[in-house]
Amino acid sequence: MRIEQDIKLDFKDVLIRPKRSTLTSRSEVDISRDFVFLHSQRKYRGIPIIAANMDTTGTFDMARALAGHQLSVALHKYYSEDELLDYFSGLTTPAVSFYSMGITAPDYEKFQRVKEGAGAAIEYVCVDVANGYTKAFVGFIHKLRTAYPDITLMAGNVVTGEMTEELILDGVDIVKVGIGPGSVCTTRRMSGVGYPQLSAIIECADAAHGLHGLICADGGCTSPGDLAKAFGAGADFVMLGGMLAGHDECGSEVVEQNGVLKMRFYGMSSREAMEKYAGGVAEYRAAEGKDILLDYRGPVENTVQEILGGVRSACTYVGARKLKELSKRTTFIRVTQQLNEIFGPQ
Ligand code: 5GP
Image (cartoon, rainbow, N blue to C red; front, side, top):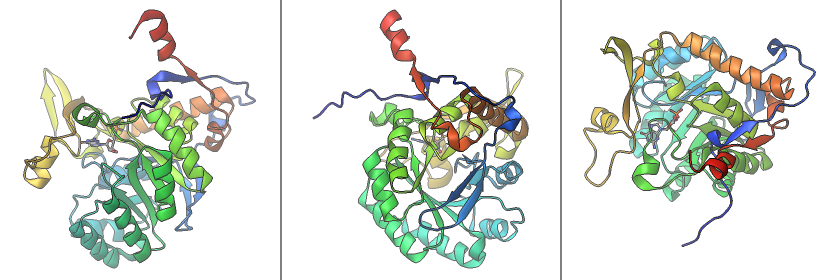
């Protein structure tokens, strides 16, 4: 056993310090990014925010709504082959939609068939496992990259610099970072495993950028300020579940509770999701996600404006004319720890 004594931080533990600036208005801030991906060598331009590949947020409707704002979606993996083929072959806008999959043989075979049918329309692929530290995951990445050299590959999840480096060397363009921070995730409570998300982003971004790779900060953002902190910490992309849930585009049913309209949102490893897609929770494991009712929030449009407005505002406060400059201009101030020292745990 070993204890690491370095302080690790979450979004709530810091604030971004304001800096002198020549910007006069938020409208002067450009929050889109341009990237050339390390392995696929393809170009990207857009606002680097991605709806999570959960069956409530990674929907076709969400993809269409977000494309209008240059945001992306990682489609959930439960769509049928026909639905995916229809969607990808009908893509008219230059929307960035990730095809998502796990690492089982049926996942791979389904991808092969859909890719064969959709061809170049599938440019972005997301390989998503709860634990990106297994040999099987790395082996799968090798196989996929060898077979499809020109796809832009996002994969994870991991939380440490050395695993980020390994994945980038193995062929991943965007490493997905986050174990346990999700709003409907119970991994930390059920298994005791996890890593404070802000520190994970800082450490993985540093590792990735040293090899010209990128990272996507996945999970734990509960407000536009958290996205600003994620980008400030070095995230190239940010993935959102809960913040985009509860909208018309999520496809869940709207229910009434004590006169308030609500929408269901659940983790993809929750009992509810496993019952829906896998016929229940297998005997040897426990659910690691929860099922909650969120206030129904109508179309996603207003929420998107709020998120983009918050990120623009952060850029203005630190004098970043472009989102790209935000991390260079970010100084984090630790807050919770200081309060804890003065007042005891909050
Ligand atoms: P959020 O933005 O809601 O905080 O986090 C979204 C992320 O939570 C997803 O992209 C995914 O990585 C993670 N997630 C989704 N469902 C589950 C689950 O059931 N268990 C765990 N451990 N993580 C989940």
